Image (cartoon, rainbow, N blue to C red; front, side, top):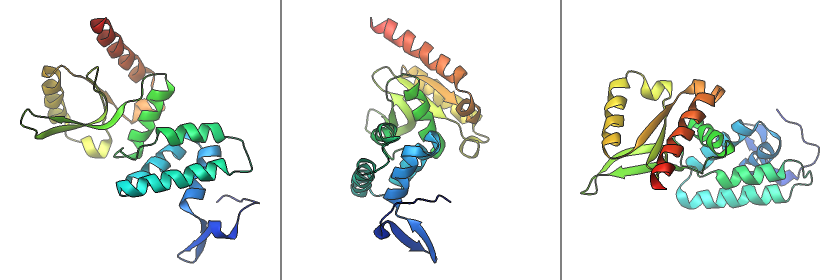
Length: 196
């Protein structure tokens, strides 16, 4: 529950007889002064659940709410988070992982990058990728990857045969990303040294 002294009556909707702020207003406020990771994941999840043409509308509405805020604190942070959000992540953890990578100073990865066979068939969808360097970052959430170690290892080997480096992240890496970031930086160094 958040108490706000200033709001317009049109900002409030009623859901199940409970007054709530509209989604764009709630997201804008959370992006400005809420926990950064939670706010970014909430925005990405809200975008993910919309049809692509509606994503642009929500994005614009949240942007306008941020710009129109009387309280200017957190506006620059909110605009950065809004610019980074794509709605492509399959889970809030993937969104948080993307934010961690960008905040560490690494290039912005492509979310849900598709790998195709020569005949055009979709083989794999990578959680996050830097296609030009052939580096993939996969989030192994417990539910999605339980009992899939053999499949993941085989997939990583097939990707390596195609010239890709695959790095796997877990929930522990979201809490303490040092290992993950060191492995990613090492992959970037190997790839950029090869291109030089």
